[in-house]
Length: 457
Ligand code: PLP
Image 1 (cartoon, rainbow, N blue to C red):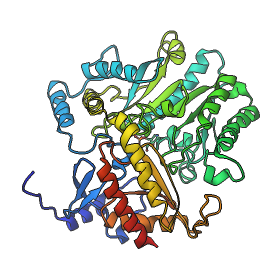
Image 2: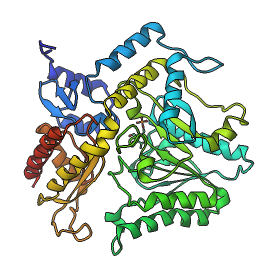
Image 3: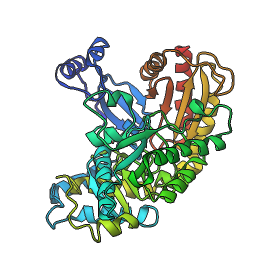
């Protein structure tokens, strides 16, 4: 609009501190730092805070605002649906128009053999649904002893009890009695961490081999599924070597184990394909999604179900005793339909593959020359920088900081104060900008990042 709204930032911060409990936040520390920054508006890749400062949102909110901020088309679709029918459930033999249309649309967009979708409101609920689906599948297959789901250390699959158990975050497992039984974790395919003395291609095969070792240790007859993010996101943008996923697929096929792709971050264009598994070269049996399906405008998630599982679960499974009030929420589905229409019309997925992904790669190759940066890694529209104490030019020879979290937080603070949002996972600095970012805006973002790295030195 023209007239800028004036906010009483101090009062908002004070109220927030007094009453609002934030996810994954140390509130004593937040209070010490003067409270949370208040975001009030967005347009494209930019955010404005309550003091009127303009910020590049290098993280698309939480990896979700794929079509960028300020899309009035989504607001209009939501408004129209709210007026027509704000809510009706999809339990007990009812459905609604946006849910039907979105289910059909997703079946078209998903890889071949995916014909069905189960809706949730979040990625966590999607992954809880995955846990119940794969175990139900094996019950119906009369192999009820196949219960164990294999996941990876440092994976992030959500915050509900089952999803956080699937996840491999030690800090989460240390609280609240996690993980639930029947979930085991293997190592993540981090070449920097575990690939010393071998090529990336060799390391990809070796890291996938950890899955086979785990299967043999448990006994193949006990294993229900393997789940992984095509590129691990919250765990620090771990981009596997190209050999990794095809080898994981081969191992799952060999032992008849279901393969689940958590596409909550990678889906809907982040990796320059509609789904990340397409780039990584594997064909999962189930796909969990959320975030980018609505670009975060309204909460929505779900599980895409391939023919292998649908034939058992849908065709002869009887009741699946699972579901949420908001499964197939008409307003969320209407937002998703418009979001997908925009992604298609503006060819944003193709643009990531052909234009912005390669440009981000080049920009980050430039940032890798900074004395504080040990290496830069990118995969389509996700990128990471490793901060190092001493740079020796190779990922295994660089000297990392002893206090990883501290330097990452300092760097993140400088970014935040100088108009660009990056995420810090320890001392690994991450961006995953909206898919609408232009080449020029990538350059603008990279310049600000360089300046903030100078401040961090
Ligand atoms: N799976 C992945 C790969 C994620 O990155 C996330 C959230 O960051 C989730 C699942 C959980 O999604 P939600 O926060 O919508 O429950």
